[in-house]
Image (tube, rainbow, N blue to C red; front, side, top):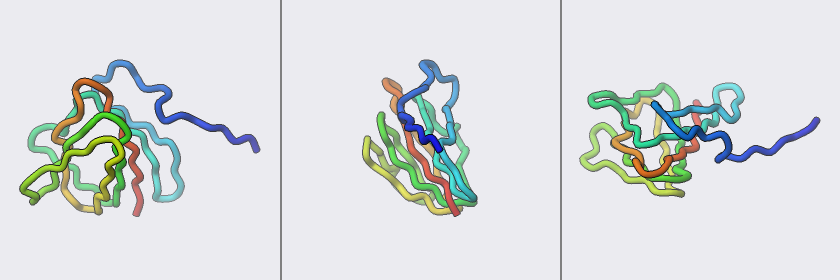
Length: 109
């Protein structure tokens, strides 16, 4: 068996019309994904409402997340991470318009 290493920063598109999602690894109901945002946000009035848990780490850039029912959004900078339980309505209010925002997401459950 030949194992290969990869770099999280390789292959990032220079221009993005929409967010870029790339599955890096997965097994069963678990999926590890790289998400690249470039000033993207969830469309007004829309919410994510997933049937699985998601843990996200902000690797570069910055972002603001809002959770349904919370008075204030949370701002993430590199190194910040959040556990989003299944069925927790949330949205991306903003991502950095001046540099790529790179997320590492683990979906499970």
